[in-house]
Length: 123
Image: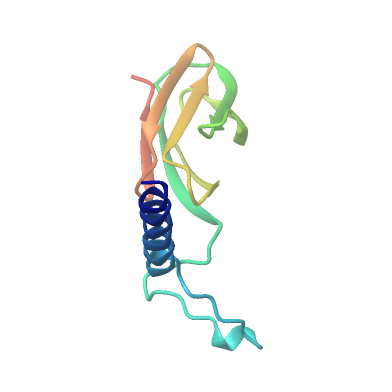
């Protein structure tokens, strides 16, 4: 009985090793960067530019700080902006950024940043 149990355990561990080897990727050492291959749609960029279209309020005399932050709360852009003026801003964001938070005085809004542009309207 003990021999049969030992044989069963040995056989099950042997199968797991084969399954693990089948799932493990093979890694071959390279001698130069030219041997490294990446998929055609792979991007080496670590940052991207998002256009932020700021639309102000007419006849609003205030000048406040416009602050744009990433998902982690890091400030990506800061500018003193007149509330009555429109602006188009080019903001460099980390490539993984999916949301931007815009703060202008008491105005606080989060926008998806999956495309190349964000439209902010104070009205």
